[in-house]
Structures are given as C-alpha cells and as structure tokens.
Image 1: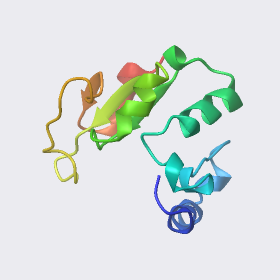
Image 2 (image 1 turned 30 degrees about the horizontal axis):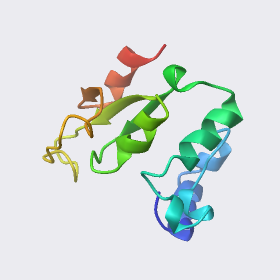
Image 3 (image 1 turned 45 degrees about the vertical axis):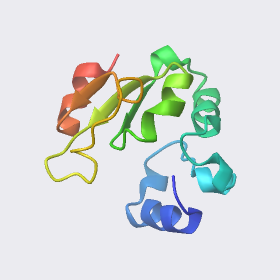
Image 4 (image 1 turned 120 degrees about the horizontal axis):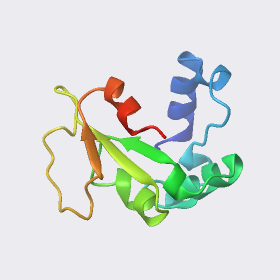
Length: 112
C-alpha cells in the first residue's frame, strides 16, 4: 500500500521480487484501490486460488489494514511490536484483527 514507486523501490532493495511468487502494489491500480479497498486481497486470492478462510493477512495498522481483509473473510493477525508506529492505537473491535502477536516468530502459531 502506498505510492507505487516507493513501494517497488523497497521491494527491489529487499529483493522480495526474487523471493515471493506474487507481489501486488495497490497504487499500481490507482490510489482509489489503496487499503482498505478489497481489490488487492481479491487479486492475490484469485492468483493463488485460495479462499479467505485459508488465508492470513498480517498487518500493523488497525485503522486500515483489516477492514478489506475481513470483508474477504481472511484471517487477520495484528503485529504489535514494542517500537511499532501503530502499537499503541486502540480501535473498535470490528476494526481490530482476530489475533494479536508481538513478533513475526509468533505467526507460526496461526499457520494452517
């Protein structure tokens, strides 16, 4: 999510494009498709031929990260790092992720 050029620069700098089968940058579709729009969630699920109940979305910003994922019935996990930008944000339950973790190492507890 975010400006396409900035996101692709990050992706290439980390060489994620060489390690991940499919990457979608929402701004490639236009700013109107930034989160919480469901288009990117739908596209990735179609690409991998997976239903929402068999997918996990991990994010850190409860104000926008989980709305679209929940609309697609994707399992949601919020990462709240001690120094994270959004760690101290409290939101209504309908915006919050289903699970909360404090380290990406904990994600293995939620993988199918």
